[in-house]
Length: 298
Picture (cartoon, rainbow, N blue to C red):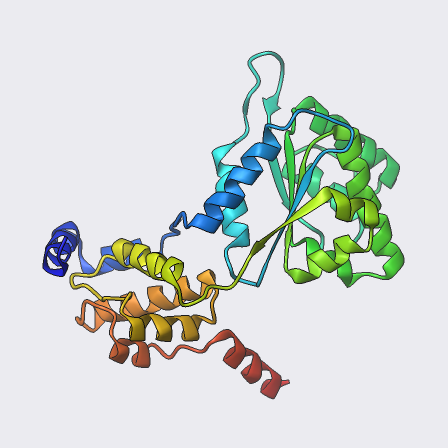
């Protein structure tokens, strides 16, 4: 397909949409199934289908901030929503996803699970009672996998609290015989490594920063195809791709935000494509630049 043909097809697809409708389309969440994400999703599928054994295999999904970890696990969770149990009362929850408490606190952890499951509980109950309620509830609704996002929060507490929290995770995995997916930054890997038994059970899967290679060019091509602009932006041209990689600092979340801002500006300025001039005008600050500004304020 030539550039002219691609341009005409894209123009036809957005011709009937107003500028504001196209901007609303840009702001909606989108999913791009790039190869590394597909590999990790397939690994999660294998874990969910794994027969119950005493030492269940687990996964530790590690990546830089804003590099697509949470979107990836949300994608998997949405594929397996809670549904009615045809063989009994209540519901079935194939995949339970929660965010780790801001500090490694067993009591808060159980509260978060019970709240997510809409299970009534008394906040002042002893932690041992909540533990039994959590385990009983998760068995009753047939939870098949537990996903713990932001698991690097473990490191926000004293070393003894960290050990206790890791023991809680290990105990839940043993008792329920379900796989556990930990999701976090590289600090999560450091936290899990402090427990030899857990480190042997959690296989690390890394979402690396993007590089200027064919995979990145394919990613840009996918983004361009989804952006409702009336003219081709040619994001895969070497100079443009290199600039986008630099401005996003290699993370897919930053790249998505940057392209969204640029596409919206292109529509409002009637440019209808992303150019170097458009990128100059969107007032973009890279993550490291934002961090420097924050340090100056402090």
